[in-house]
Length: 325
Image (cartoon, rainbow, N blue to C red; front, top):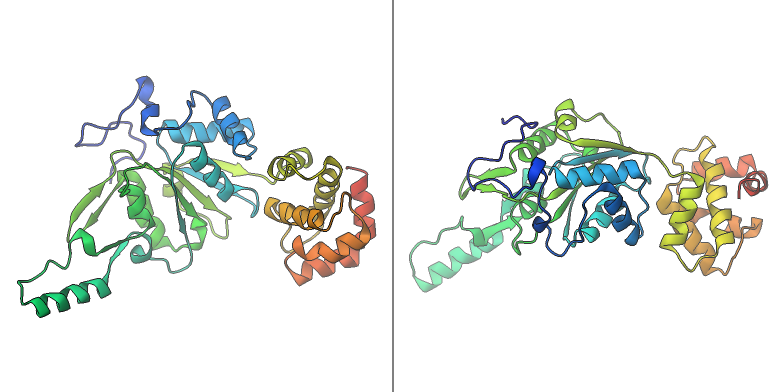
């Protein structure tokens, strides 16, 4: 396996276009705005509605410039998946998402043969009385996310999101490591498929298990915390601009108090946005006990957590939150 830390260009094809210092040239992302530095990435992400701090913007900049996968770990709901969507929007690139799960294999992630189409081709050949048909041509190939990302049919360089890699097993992780090291796969019937301009790659993990060191060495790494009170308020106002400042402050302060409780699944940013939408749909411009009681299921998704909050006392949580709002 090639050294994943090597900066030499791949053999064949003359290497990828790079500027001085080994940085990928902007022409690889046609239509995308100029991203000469992390501050430009931060501004571009903000224009999509995603608020990134300077450290995260720097990680994104380096992942694009150095053509290295970016591994994002952190709490569920901290914005890992949304970052990949925002980055695709920034780069004017299609987003290809591979959702990992226990038991995922190469056939579901890379390719498999379209057996019904092959059988139909055989039947048509028999009816016409023509010669044998090549059942392993590209027209019979069912392209799954990883192959779509390496060899996009429309030629547009994509953003590849490998979501929740920690849910996959060790064998799939090892296969993915080889693909990310070489940007190449071999289909036995067709030969090697190599990406001259690899996709921008975001890997996410919720740390239900530890990923292998080999994957981490191949990637840049960033840990995503749940946002601070002020940042989450900015997220609410940015994503839901029709929501008033008063409601945004009240909601984010209340959610912050809930996260301090011993909950099975503390609410993430997505739940904060869902709850704010629910309250706004009911015409609320501030928090009240009746409104909270009626809509708490938009924020907390486990009965145990609802019971914990009600046992703590919703009124007490609301009163504490008003001290921070």
